[in-house]
Length: 585
Image 1: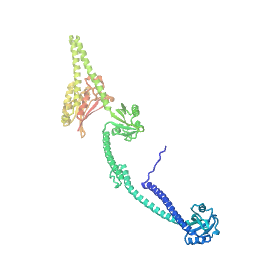
Image 2: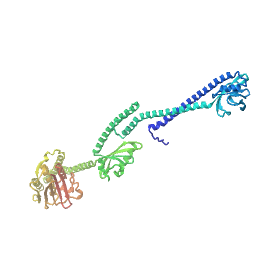
Image 3: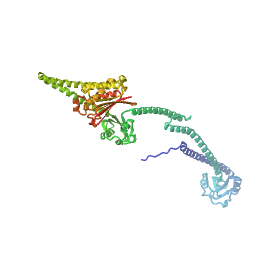
Image 4: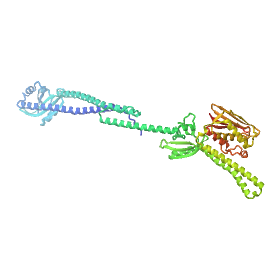
């Protein structure tokens, strides 16, 4: 069924027609009743006058004979407007105060005459064919000396109509005046009501636009209007407080969303993005810079996620999953924030767990690697010790060789443990109070060279050092020396003993760079991003043969992080490698 549209109008345009119609009908009905009463009253007055006149005339004519009736009737009528007529019982006119009876026809068929001949007085008002205008007739039976007659007196109806016309004019003027006065009073009353209502309407319209700058004050003495105004003002105050509270909550919620590291996206039933926080725009970086308005499928293409969203929309539940998008891993929570028949909205919270997944992979690799690294020397120690216990002790040559192997594996095990302890100590250091000392670089390099030459038994190795004796960095002398030792030791291990090693120091406004270069085996490109991981080796067999634990470069990395610096590597397979330590200014 089509709904009927009602167009509202002003108060006066609605009330005026109805009030005008009501007053007009009231005047017409009241006027009709009054006019009818006046007309009846005037008519009754005329009838009463005719009745009294007729009785008087009857008494006068009672002693007149038929010859003197005419003169008597004429003399009685005189100059008045009365007409006196005497009719016999045959209906013939005997006497008439205005006309010659001989010229008048039989009146037996006249209404008033017929009734009077039957002995009943009668009144009628009708058109007189003899005179040519309306008359009021009153006829009564009388007994004269000439016999039984009918005495009829009459008056022109024009007098009655004239009186009624005057009454009608007076009533019409009075009705118009009354109507005008009523409408005027109505106009004043409506204006009295409409003015404060108009003020209320204007202030309500301003309130609808959430404009609370003015109080609602219609200035009306009408109690109902004042009640409405007070109610609107109370509602405005309450609404203002609610809006302020909602605004604060919205700002707080927006601040929380903006500060969240998690990406938050709200979508509708069509999977169109309605809202997205800055983290979401940063994670998924749309072409236009904003996710709002884009379809989710254009931003996150993942079948499992889309299935979770569809299931959540159906049962308004909550689901989560781990997905991979653009080489990043996310833990996604899918929750219904608004469930309605026509508009269901779903919120997606993406928690970037790429770093956690990477750390988990490193942890697993570390556990596997450390287990493998420890297993090799422990297996050797266990195997050779069992061999000795089984009788090899009796063979001094074998026993001595096995003990040397056990000792070497023990030293290897001790090296792994020492490096692990160094790494643990570096990771747990929080205070930097021991990293603010001024450390001269050249003496530390020479001390490191002495240790490395003695350790590798390469006392004559060609190692070239280019460093300003006055060059200094802020840091911890022991840790900087440990970093130099690890890099120089690696350069000696993974290059031919006849090839030179170069150590160069440079300094500028950005900081200090110290490079350790060799012309050894080099590092393949695929391994460059992983060589600083714990236990990672480019060539495991060669590394173990050289006595490496796989932790040296990882230690160097953590030492530089403690100094708020960095370590980089430049290398090509077969052409050597250059490790660069960068200290901040």
